[in-house]
Length: 534
Image (cartoon, rainbow, N blue to C red):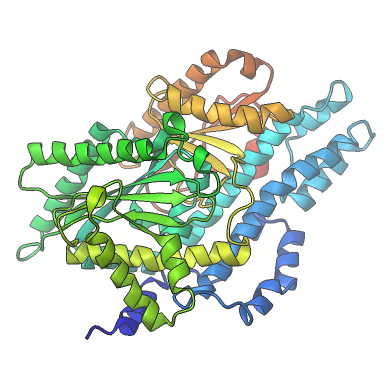
């Protein structure tokens, strides 16, 4: 008989190091995210520590990791929340004779950095440019939080090795994830999947999760070529392993009529089938071009209200079905009162039951052993995340609607992992991504422009430091997208309601963000106050 308790303990030992969560949050450069007073408040108040002894969570939940994630979430979100109040107080003293020094003191104490002098010094002859200051603060806070995590991730090699070792044990050499463009999915890797950043390479986001098949096919070819070159240098024959493509869509259990995004908003099943069609198209194209190669596919749905997953279970042929999935909220509820041993056993029963579903959900038998192992780990991880939301957010997030502070266009900055702060869409040109960008703009019109706030936009691309012109090409791409936005949203730019920032970054894991010249506002002041890499 299979010992499910032993299996669960093996999974916990293997994944406990994944996010390297056994250390204090923001230990390297604490001022980057939370101001001193906030960090002191978090450290001195003991609600989480005291609560740990009385909270009765799920037997399979990793409570230590959940505590760390809550500290990270609270500190990071507090840094963004402090911006509005600090600028409001600064605005009330703009006509005082010592305004600049007092404003800088407020900003440094409450936000952790100084504001650009050029903007402050103009306040005595014209109205204080709150829009420029707000965008500066949002951008600066985001950069500092991102770089904070880059430094922590650089120390996280053991977690990455453990994660990739786990992938290998599932028969996988690469896991590639595409998300729907929704800020509420921005923390999927760290929170929902509980995986270290570098284990997943680079994640991309598209409207409704509809990734570009041709782009993914090219990426597959690049990764497989690298794998073959590495295998050819090894003694003996490399073991068979597969490339796994994962697509993630968003849904809402509290507001099902608003599930999904883009053209599939309110049409959940149609949206799921559209994403599934992209996965099948990629797999079919690959089989046509390389018949001997095998691509594994997986479809996940994230309930943005509770972070509960829908895991669409592959059958024995690797095929997926929009109707055949594991509902993790149901699994969590059904196993909440069970011991770890019993709960682990029930998880396997759920996989068997879903694999054997009939009717519309009917498949061709059980998933292979490697996929079953991978799905089982997703179930363990998601139980911890559902427990996190239950413990610290009363079972569902109160900011269930869009509340992003920044729009990120271009390539992802994976080091920042927190829901509902950044709206990200992966694009190489403005023209090809206009619909996705406009979807984000419609969100920010409601959340920002309607409340008198500007829309902060960050355009970001990466470059290969070993290729001579790669950095220049990344900068050119930034400028091209920015200029296209300036032309398309000319009225918003002219009125200061749309503020653009551009950054590039080398592909090395420890590389920091680099400011691109040619910004609209206070570039010299930003360089001086942020310590930004040039």
